[in-house]
Image (cartoon, rainbow, N blue to C red; front, side, top):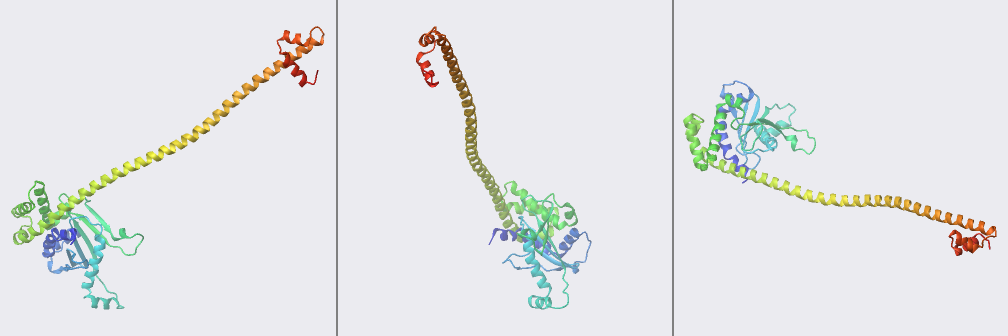
Length: 349
């Protein structure tokens, strides 16, 4: 048996007792939700399923009233699948309404339109996880794409401090919420679960909170609440462990992502730097080589030009017949052998 089913047999059993076995409380709750003031309890027909389609899971309170098929569910843990469960519950309720499986099958194939009461679905939440004052849950949220069937569950938070309007109009709901609140407060004081439940029941009877039901069904209520309290603590521990695991997973993922990002960034930076360095070095090398080549070429050109001028001066001195070529080279500071090579290149002897 799952933890959730066990939990439903705890506080949910008390919810069924308060509203399923006391039609006057169900009618008051109906009035509080719908803003009506009906008083004739005899017009209300309780149709609570004792064994519905989900293997032992039972719906909490359903009844026919004012042309509505009202389904009231209690939840001590948040469950986004309530619309899907409601689909199964309503299917069974309508089959019962139409007269059973064989009769309903025959009526469904009739040419006459089969009128059915309008479905109204409410979920009363009093778990320890913080939730909104009121929220709607939709079956379509479970679809991977678009669908043609919609089920809406109105979830109402009945924890202490929430839904004051409805509680003011329905004392049974306010009392139910107050009993659960007192038990939780007792547990916070490190009182044993048995003592927490018994002390809360005593104080509620004294203060007129669900006192009629608690006096008459004390043992039944206490046993149900022991189970519910145990499962509630297990659920709270599970929630804490989930939060811790989520936090640890985030930290681990962050560290891994940081390391991987650092490595990838370092490699990319290295590659980028290497490329930019190569490009920059190539450009600077080209510029430097170009400059040095220019300077070297300019110097060599100057030297060669200078030598050619001096060789021409030697030619002038020797042409006058005053000096020999060798003596002219000596006077002008020109190497004689270089001069002779110059003359050979020019084709002169």
